[in-house]
Length: 287
Image 1 (tube, one colour):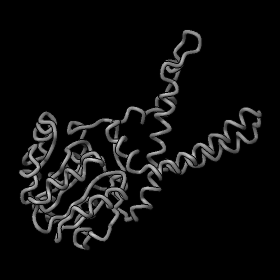
Image 2 (cartoon, helix red, strand yellow; image 1 turned 180 degrees about the horizontal axis):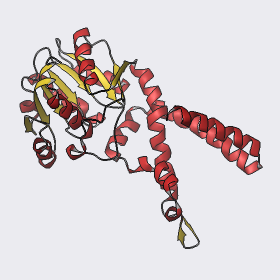
Image 3 (cartoon, one colour; image 1 turned 120 degrees about the vertical axis):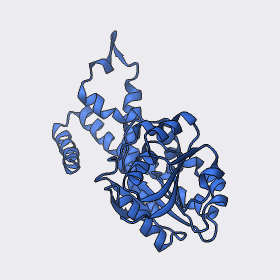
Image 4 (cartoon, one colour; image 1 turned 180 degrees about the vertical axis):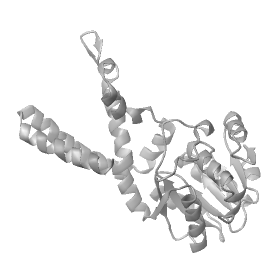
């Protein structure tokens, strides 16, 4: 594939940003890759793994000459980060991100985009519990969905290049309206995190007699609470910026959980079977 960008500056060289850098470096999708980070130790790991041509903690130095900025920082820090970068970018630079909330990103970042630049908000629906440049994996996005949410500050050329970059990772790229994205992800991603964390929190320290309940769980408990090990820094921002959609998803779950609870309390085995099989049908579709 031909070179898509002369310089890609990745702000936040962690799991997502670092994985994208590995692919871009491997396949020569960009001419130069610069990493901007808060901690020198993580940047050192990124350089050692060969995913960056240059690493810095200075926004002006990182942005200088960049024609693609990838915001892979916590969502609520994107405004401040972008404001420090845009004065130093190439005049026609494309700005993209990897956040799992899109309405807030589009609404808050568009006013910061200078004339001539474009915003192409995106969300790679991929990840794992480990973080940092050490966790980056060039196969992380393969066969995963990447959602692009164009807006009024998205040019056709910038959209095409950003989508081509993600397709080169092996991802399946699709487009959604930002609000539709947030409603879907609140149900499919944000709600599962909340449910896993709530279950783990409910069982933390819970005893029957002198026995700790969590110690008697097997793979089912480990699998169901896997997401509870996720980074609070990332989820803090998601809960703060997609509050309304997550609240709607929580009501959906609460209603169904209430059906389970009522059926158990009344001993209605047939109703429990109906609910159980309804859940099983959904699970079988996502294998």
